[in-house]
Length: 368
Image (cartoon, rainbow, N blue to C red; front, side):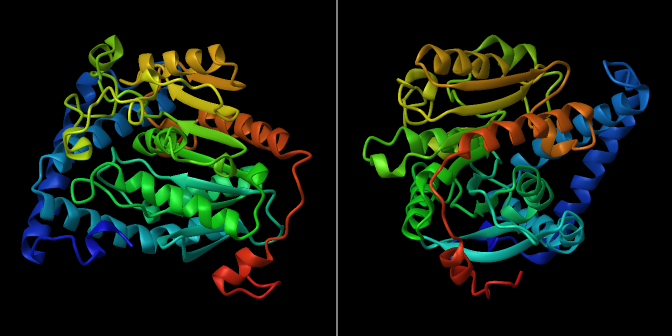
């Protein structure tokens, strides 16, 4: 369920949405027209791959800047339009990976669960999608999360958590915690549950772990993060130095999510928190992204707190590059590292049966 499908959320009339789509396409076309002046073939990869990086950067940055300037109902309508396209385009790619997808609900939170068609999962990953706490949907992440499923041999539940500004902090974290509790109630050992997310979803995963009311039973086996938003103060040098090279808009919005909450609070900016007791953590990010410096310090603080940490920075790449450019060699390397991290993490964990998980989905023991 994309946000625009929730009864509490307002959307724009269809003619307005159509006009917004047309203007969005125009903005991206202008971005592509600027491309020849950006030295699109230069970089650390082959000329063709460098061109792919340049095109992705220009188009995504243009789109994000345009979308974030829309009125909220128009933003939700545009999001619904994209969600609808993805619901048609993505399923063939998911099936090509031998992964089955099942819309379901866990802990009262809707989402999509991905699992292999041919093998029982080693564990379950609770994935919190990115979007700066304000946008995107599980359907838009279908190819990436199904690939995470395939590469890690884990089932992946992508939570359709509530988004700002309609549902500001801490609504998203409450939804994520409810899903985690539901997984425990299904009999899945915590040693086989991983918490994961990218961008704002990565920040949300930290918020869940930093909740002072969480119990020891809610400790996941590991934490997996891609370009996480770990400091909402946005005062590190890379936030300005890399603004030219990243896909994010230079004026990153956070006020609608915080809704008056302190940006330096430990629950939304884990760089201000004690990270001791965190589970083993995997984090990957690009050297050209605006969040580079906060993520570097986050990885350092994890290690200083004694947390087993696997950190990978990739030179010349921007925010959430494995999601946007899965064909890159560096993206494939991220998945190879992730596979090793998770397989090592769940080795020796208590055995479990996914019978209850299948029952939750209404599946027979042999069906997908």
